Amino acid sequence: MYNNRNMISYDLGIIGAGPAGYTAAIRASQKGLKVVLFEKEAVGGVCLNKGCIPTKTIMHSCDLYNSIKKAEKFGIKISDFSYDYEKILERKNTITQKLQKSLTRLIQSYDVSIINANAKITEPDIIEANGITYKCKNIILATGSKPHDIPGLKTDGKFILNSDDILNLKEIPQNILIVGSGAIGTEWARIFSSLNKNVTVVEIAERLLPAADLDVSKRLERLLKKSKIKFYTQTKIDNIKDTTLTLSDNQTITPDIILCAAGRETVFPEGIEFEKDGKFIKVNQNFQTIYPNIFAIGDLNGKMQLAHSAVHQAISVIDYITENKAICFNINNIPSVIYGNPEIAWVGKTEEMLYGYDYKASTFPVSALGKAFADDEIDGFIKVLSVDDRIAGAHIICPEASSLIHQFSLMIDNKIKTDNILKTVFAHPTYSEAVFEAILGLGKMSLSLPKEN
Ligand SMILES: Cc1cc2nc3c(=O)[nH]c(=O)nc-3n(C[C@H](O)[C@H](O)[C@H](O)COP(=O)(O)OP(=O)(O)OC[C@H]3O[C@@H](n4cnc5c(N)ncnc54)[C@H](O)[C@@H]3O)c2cc1C
Image (cartoon, rainbow, N blue to C red):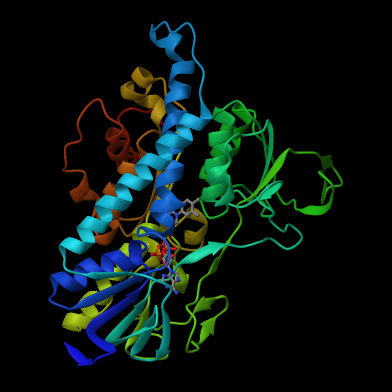
C-alpha cells in the first residue's frame, strides 16, 4: 500500500483515540477497512483518563465508605475506619493504566495502526504526524473536548481548578466551592461530601441539574440538603479578591479551593479550516463536515457530550462509510446518568418538554418496594411519561438507576406499547418492579400504592 517512499495509504484515518475514535477504528477494521489511528496523549481519551472511569473509580471508594458509615444499622460492627485519599487516587491510577493497556491490545488485535503523535490535516485526504504523511480516503475527526475557563474564573491548578486538575489533587481541603451543577459538578459534590468535606455548589440556572426533569432536580435538592451540601441557584460569582468570593446575591464565601465544573470547549486539529456551529464543528446529519470525506464525531460536534453518544456515532458513521447506511442518531434517546447515592438517570422527554401535548405521567416511589427497605434506600422514584400509549421519557432517582434506565431506552427505541410491556414479568424483590409499577401507574393501576380518591 505504499504510493511512494514517504506516503502511506489507508482507507480511513482517525484523529483521536477516545471512545469515538477507538470505536470507529475497531468497527472499521471489522468491516474490512485499513485503518490508522492517531493519538497525541493516551488511548481512551477523556473518558478513560480524565472523565468517566477515574471519577467512577473514586466514587466507588466513596460509596463503600458511605456504606461502612451505615454499617451498624445493618448489624455490622466496624469499630475503627477512615479513608486514605492517596490510596483512593493510587487505585484510580492503577485502574486507568490497566485499562489503557488492555484497550491498546484490543485495538491492535484488529490490526489498526496506532500512531502516538499530534496529527494535523494538511489537505482533505492527507494527515501529517511526526513528519510522515498519510493518505486517507476518508478521515474521522474525534478530537474531543477539554475543560474551559468560566469568564472571571481563570484556573490556576491551585485555588481555581478544573475537572482535570482535581483528579490529581493529593489532598482534598475542607471547604470546597463547585461552580456548576451538571453531571460533573453534582458527582464531585457527592464525592467531596462523602469524604466529610464542606461543599457549596453555585449554579447560574434556576435549579440544580438543569437538564433533568424538574421533579428530579427538586429531589436532588432535597438529597443535597440532607447531605449538608449547600447550594445557591440563579447565582454566579461576581468578584474574587484573594480567596474571598462575592456571589451575585452579595454573600461572601471563602473556600479553600474552587472546582469549575461548567462547560467544555472543543479541540480542533491543526491544519485545514472547518466550518463551525458556535463552538462546535459543523456537521450534517451524516456527521460530514464541509468536506464530504471528513467526518466529525463525539464531543467535537457537540451533539451530546457523553461517551456512549460518541460510541454510537462512531458505529453509525462507519456503517455509513462502508454500507451507505442512513445514520439514525436521536439525541432524545440517549440516556444520561449521574453517579453517587442514589444514582440518577433519564432518557427521552422531560415533563416540561411535553407541556402542550396529550401525555400521561406516573411516579412510583421506591419507598413502596420491599427491596428498597431491605437496602435502606427508600428515598427515590421512577417517573414515566407516555404519549399515545408509548413511553416518551423516564426519570429515575434510586439505586441501580444507571442500569434500570436501559429498560426504558429499549422501550422508547422500539416504540413498544405499554400494554405489551406489561406482559413482561419483573422479578421480586428488585428495583425493576418500580419500572413495572410506574408503567401500571400510567393507567392508574399501580398495585403497591393506595387507592386514589
Ligand atoms: C469529569 C468527567 C466525567 C465524565 N463522566 C462521564 C460519564 O460518566 N459518562 C459519560 O458518558 N461521559 C462522561 N464524560 C464525558 C466523556 O468523557 C466524553 O463525552 C467522551 O470522552 C468523548 O469522547 P470523544 O472520543 O469524543 O473525545 P475524547 O474522549 O475527548 O478523546 C479525544 C482524543 O483525541 C486526542 N486528540 C485531540 N487532538 C488530537 C490531535 N490533533 N492528534 C492526535 N490526537 C488528538 C485527545 O488526546 C483525546 O485522547 C465525562 C467527562 C468528564 C470531563
